[in-house]
Each structure stands twice: as structure tokens, then as C-alpha cells.
Image 1: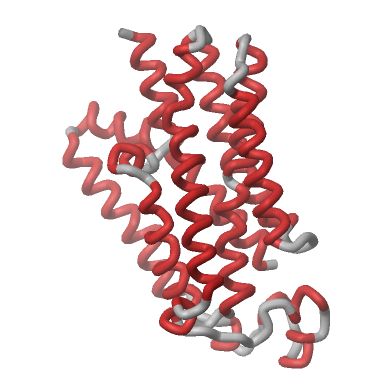
Image 2 (image 1 turned 30 degrees about the horizontal axis):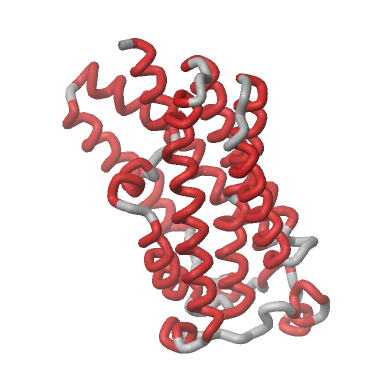
Length: 260
């Protein structure tokens, strides 16, 4: 059930800002900006760090279990999906010596560069083609929702379909929608296409972790993922990286402009 686990984990990133940004603003208005830093620090300590220390384990084997409900080592290679990935456990250094690692880096770079450019400038583009501000706010909000839901969807499907095919399909869908967005001629089209773009653009990101796990194994997954992803994210420029902390900033900026 690795696909749904990683997919559900990815759902948190687009949805969290919808709660955290208004909460931070309320805290600043009520108690000042320092309260946000104190609140965030306490929340991370109590809700993330302590539970991780008490509950998190490196591998199922550390507590006498096996991955994906297997009852013994033989079950790990008993079926098609479990056999994929096998016991090939690469270190980060060994992974970097393979062509696959650099293909993944290149695909991550291109994917982030293109999808980030479209996402971060989508609200401004819709305004330039004459879409009303209220409609833009609705479209970007739906984009954030579908962007979050798509992580769970693609992750769940990856348990039945190869993550490579899902990654290619989701990326192709995002590319087609981006081309169709160039022909936006009304509010309904803008809302529908923006929502569909959110559904497709997250697929490549949600399957990357699955590909890394399948190709390089579980032993050094964190080190390999932590090496590959930052290199790929060079595709985001400085301004885009700031905005990447929350797609909600786009919607927030739209309503601020309207208010002014």
C-alpha cells in the first residue's frame, strides 16, 4: 500500500495553507507576529517531533512485521507487485552512479520548471485575458483542491498501474490542459480547465517517490530522495520558490487586489 500512503501524504501540502495562512494572519492581528513563530514552533514540537520520536519506526521489520501485510520473507516476492522493487537496496552514492538517477533528475527539473511557471502565473494570465477577479479566485481555489486530491488519486492508482505509466499520463494531461488554457474565452472554460490542470500536474510529483522506492529499494530511500528532489527543484526560480510554499498565496493575492 505504498502508493496510497505516499499519495495521502502528498495531499497535505496543497491543503495545509488553506488552514495555516488564515490562522497565522489571525494570530498576528491578535497577538503580533512573534506569536506566529512561537505557535509554529510549539505545534511542530508537540504534533510532529514528539509523535515521531515515540511512534515512528524505520522499517516494519524493526517491530517484527513485513511490508504490505506480508507474513514472511517469502511473501515479499510472491506476487507481481511485490516482486517489483525486490531487495535491491542502493545507497545514495550507488544510485547517483546510475543513468536512471539522472534521468529522474532531468524529468523533475523539466516538470517543476514548466508546471511551476504555469501555476505561479495562472492567476495573472486569467486576468490578462479578461476573466473576472471573483472567477479567478474560484478557479485557483478549485486548482488547489484538485491538486491536493490528485496526490491521493494517483497514489492509489499506482497500486494497480505502473507508476511510470501514471507519471507519463499525468504529465501528458497537464501539458494538454496547459495548451488548452491558451485558448480560454470565458469564465466556465477558465474554471474547468484550471481545475483539471490541478488534477494532472500533481501526478508526476506523487509518482516520483514511488519510482525511487521501486528502483532503489527501501534502505536508503530518504537519502536518495533527499538528494534527487532538491537538484530537480533548481527549476524553480527564487520568486517561484517563495510562492511554492503555498498555492493559497495566489488566491489570497487575487482577493487582496480586488479589495484594493
